Length: 524
Image (cartoon, rainbow, N blue to C red; front, side, top):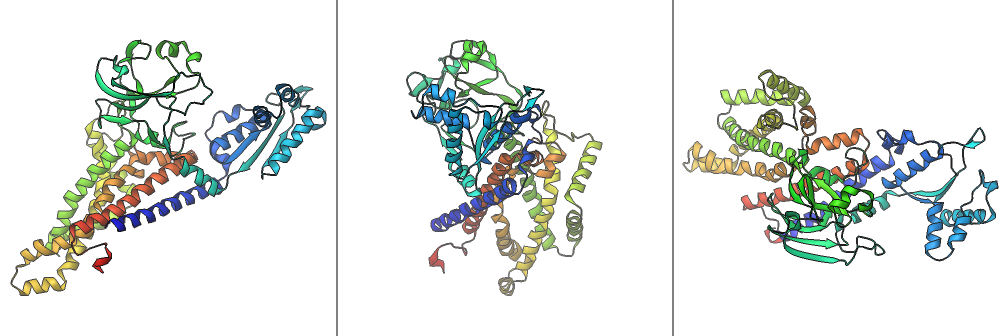
């Protein structure tokens, strides 16, 4: 069994990499990269050369290319001691055109061009834009080099940075932050230092709190290891995909907290998420009054569940109804074949199969609205009745599928040789049906249980969109509409991982309930 699981995990890892590779080819290679600015309000504010520079900066940020400016090049030479500050200042004296550059500028521009063109970069020079004898807005001279990332480079960068382990060297070494290191305390300073609440805190790390306890499930939390699926640049601007799916939503929940300076107030700030932002205290009197260092970037506590939370709750309840209703009805349809229940069930299966899912989802939505059920999620006033219509819309087609397959498996088994042998041995049809046939027929159904549970977290794309459920499924649709490639890749990776795990767990569960199935070589 162990050898089989390891083998499947290895194959699954290759499958996941292949999925991400294909998605990257589609969104980065075949799609016009200008589309990523479709919902960027800042691009229209850029003028002339500044607009071009802005686009290249964003393309680098979004993982399309490597972008180096002439100023960056001179800074690197200065840092390495190849030129001094006076030379650096002289080397940036550009004319309105290349002919007007100083001799030193011309020399270093040529060095810049040769250096980067030899590495496969394209060097671009945008001369100053002149209007009526004056420089136009955004018309300053620009010189930069860029090189598109290959899909293999992009794939390597993505997977090598997907997991980050926090350490005391996150903050640059030249930054004066005091003594770097880790501190363990039994009494969390966030609660005034009086409440017993163990915490591991860092200085020089990305997050202030690396390990901490609170009164929310699962009660022990960590920031030492973070998952980076890709930072959104439009849907949830500046937020990682994994964080977007797992952080709470809705209005703020305030509580009395004590800031590091000792200032106490009712606030929604979650100090346990405090992250380092260089020089942040000096820019705000408010931060200066609350924090003693630059660990000032905090998330807020919100009252509603995360995207994954909503998707999982709706999906798992729908799955429970599928097994509670679909299995026994399918068994009874097979037991009383050609009876009234079998005929009615067959009509229901045919109806669900024939009608497009979007049509009956809107039909259920209209019926629910007519009888007074909430037909749209309200994040400000979430009630249990809001779950009814999404769960019903999600469960009914799956119930039909479960009925169909359970009926088919049962009827196939009833025609098997072992059933005829048992009947000839004197067993009644009822005994054969419940003691043997149903047990064997249920094995393929049992295999799908892990998949049904895990894939509930992916959300239902159409159902969540129709009922405005703030779940994980809607995130992918929003990302596609906004050309948010990072989110598309991150969600695709998340779906692929869950799919692989569900297949492996399904096989393991099937082997556990059926002694005839073995994944060892000895069984051959």
